[in-house]
Image 1 (cartoon, rainbow, N blue to C red):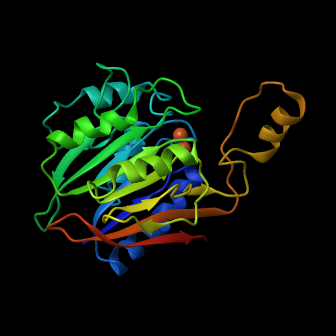
Image 2: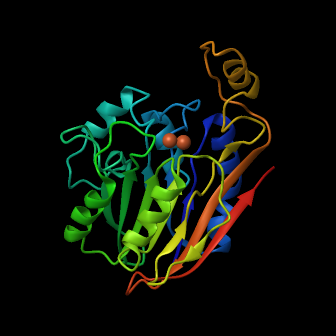
Length: 265
Ligand SMILES: [Fe+2]
Ligand SMILES: [Fe+2]
């Protein structure tokens, strides 16, 4: 079975390029499970319920986030609007699992695909160069101890390459894929690890590449050149959709192929 994971969707340019390509990519590869990281979908900062619903209309099964999950306050009511055992859209938008206990939302979603394959999607956030997270490695162990599905996709939203590579090896053979997000630049290290887990350090941003990781480049340059604070705005130029396609055996969850996709205008 084929699983498509779309990297951090950034602003309106990111949403537009994903809308342009997602249909033909899913059709060409007979995608059965579609996951998107949406932490920057609303102007670069967080996601609103309206934008989530718009992205669900593209056929998305599960959405993951990261450090920007709380940027739009209205998301909290959306996450709180459904019970833990719901399969409604609002339950399919995840926040990192390893935040402080008791925060709104959930870090894992367990569902069933249209052909009857049980799956789980886990959202984890790193803690090297990042704040507000607990140990993602033991959090992953705790989650895996209670997940029944064989097909398990982990979005590891982290800054440090070393932490991401380490997580890949930590979960090798226990999950279908460990796919990195957050740095907004795709890495060329997609591979199958030794025990059947597909791995990539970062899927890359789905958004404007004439930018500094999505933000208008002049605004970021001004901050680097002067040290002065300033408002960041989402760029528009040169949008690309970055996604990663993972093929796995639905019976065992083991991956057999991983392929990077990058599509522009
Ligand atoms: Fe991001
Ligand atoms: Fe992030």
